Image (cartoon, rainbow, N blue to C red; front, side, top):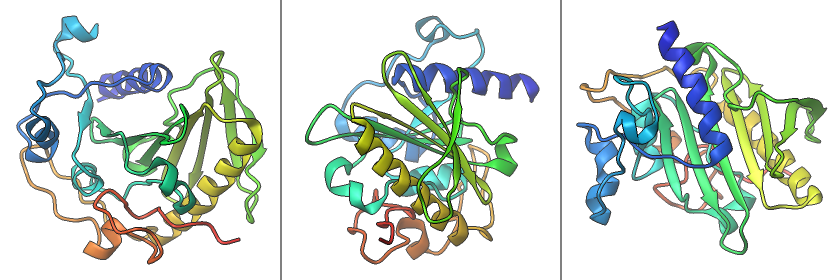
Length: 246
């Protein structure tokens, strides 16, 4: 198990900094539907192709939509603040990292900016840092009402990495291609909505099942897809897509 978690941590780091992912082929309907729908051949996930240790599978799994992802990981996942939906919804890619961490990637419709949003259940993964970044961090408040403390880093390429926790959840985002003012506003929205997300799901029951067993929804159907009535109806819009209160 320790080796497994060390490998997962290494993959988190390599994956979030390169911004690339490939998904492993599995005997799971939720995870093969994307390839079936598009008719595209799955990526080569052999150990030689991925540069991985022989016998260690690529942990990136891709899903058709967020409900499929939530069924696989067994917990609700963070999507986007509502005020970013018009520009970034729908997600470009919806992944889990070995069913421990959700990893959802967005591409702006207006420019080259990109966002990656990660969620994990702290009690399950055993860490509060799912960023995958191991460089220098600065700690600051996010500008939200509760003045949440976040850790912020910037890579040599200008990508901003942020990590924080709320309730039972660890969150991490990367944002690239935006100016400082836009980044500050986006961060405030992300943290504010994450706080409400964590409060809403503070008592949810983890419903993770082994890969060969089907998982049941982690919450009521309404909670599994939307936390706010003002969010647009979509199979890819999950619990955290509400706009922060002014």
